[in-house]
Image (cartoon, rainbow, N blue to C red; front, side):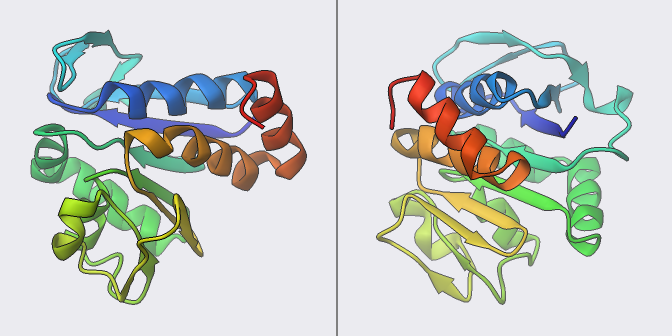
Length: 183
């Protein structure tokens, strides 16, 4: 079974995090929502409290296939401040494992140097902070090898379906898309 961690920091975008979690779980992927706050309940950017599956400090990420960063403010800034997360993502990047980010969160990948030679997208007002080789403005989701980026809340479903496609194949992504009356 494929395994994915979705990281929640205070001020995360609820729709982006929970859409990914929901759709990947429907596809049979083991998804762990991981708090980087030291607390089990993390409040999103719209003050919705979400109970996470684990704290960052409790996790063993060895068998994870993908790490996902939802956007939102100040959630994105709070993710970028977490040194343990930076170390983990750098190791995944070196190991050529999947890194995915949506909305403002691709700027975290850019700040840590993962986009210097890649195409990427993000929330339109954040594009100057992306630090990507090429900023793509006309696609909902951009895949450049093992780095997947998306533009924002409105692209959360295609983003999640692309993650399913990468982990489980196109047939499973289409099945999930049809089951939620998206495709």
